[in-house]
Length: 256
Image (cartoon, rainbow, N blue to C red; front, side, top):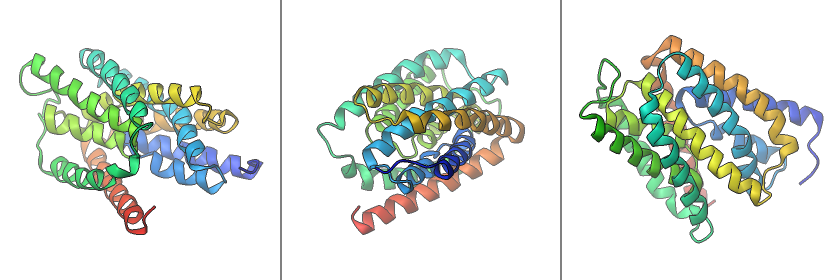
């Protein structure tokens, strides 16, 4: 890895701001950050670790902005935070024994299914979970555990999967789903970042300046989502899903 110069640092900071903004609305910030880190010469394992080290700040800022708008359900968060955290710990442990690449075909199919379901499922107009509260908590916990495990193990599109899961299984509005997704996403980012930091694969001299840009981008993205509502969020979720399908499909085709 060659030393990152000032122009490259500035490009990475700008990329982090853009990624934080998009991720706060629809997930998929890693689509911007990981290629940018690879482009400046970071090896893949350092790029993935550094991505986690800086992205947790964006999810934190977005969660705070959504909470201020009254869109975060604290009871649901008490379930999804620990289950997503646990899932990410499980996922990062699985990386040691299973190659993440084996998941690519399955992820490709799941992204297509998630995009279709987000398009056709009609959420509760009031934005609240449908069904009993206990059932909703179970559903939220299982979604957070499953996606958290995926986030720790493989990662691309985790924020989008959180949103899709909450829309499909809890019938939340897109705004509520995006807000609750940020709580779970922050938890899985913290768990994964802690393990990556322990393994020494986060380049903090790069991650910390990017973290500041992530804070600004995460807050701005959540603010836009709060103001513009479900239509914008749904459109961006579908766009991110399509971008992920193209990216993963291309990697499969090229054998990467």
